[in-house]
Amino acid sequence: MYKPLSFLAGLAMLAAACGNPVTPQDRLTVNDKKINEIIAQMTLEEKVEMLHSKTNMSSAGVERLGIADMHYADGPFGIREEGVPNGFTPAGWKLDSATYFPTGSALAATWSKDLAYLYGTGMGKEARLRGKDVILGPAVNIQRLPVGGRTYEYLSEDPILSAALSLQYTLGVQDQGTAVCIKHFAVNNQETNRGSVSSRVAP
Image (cartoon, rainbow, N blue to C red; front, side):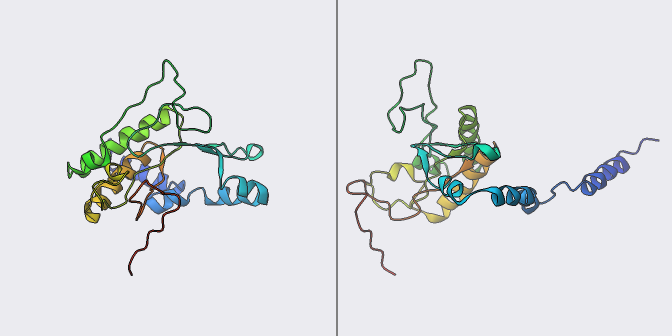
């Protein structure tokens, strides 16, 4: 006689015996041994090359070890159309287009973690379709100045709301096989002299 529960229990035991990851931590570490073996074969120069830009939106891999270049997508509320080499100006491809998602402020105005997850899902899926590995976002700096040059990118002046929505955004992106690079953590409140301004924060 067919016993569905017994069958499912058997499958679960077989999966456990095969060493399939069963917890989030297991899934994160399942390839650690293989990764460590690859790192052990890398030269210092190869490691350094991976830590800085190869182009404006990529970093170098290590071809001899099968490590591909990593490609980035900017920014936090849209996967840019392809740009000119080492620049942000669109290349002007006739058949190229990109989706502009609502800004961070608009997403935060929904107060919806479910929508934040779906937002991330859409971003992650489009990034993968465009051959991007990492989204440069979400942008989580707390909104402090209404006239700040990047205020519209950030989720809210409320750190609790920003945290809740950026978490779901991140999970949605990651569930599509794309990584995020959370950015602009704090005191990125002006565009004028942004490369040299000293932001002094009281303790």
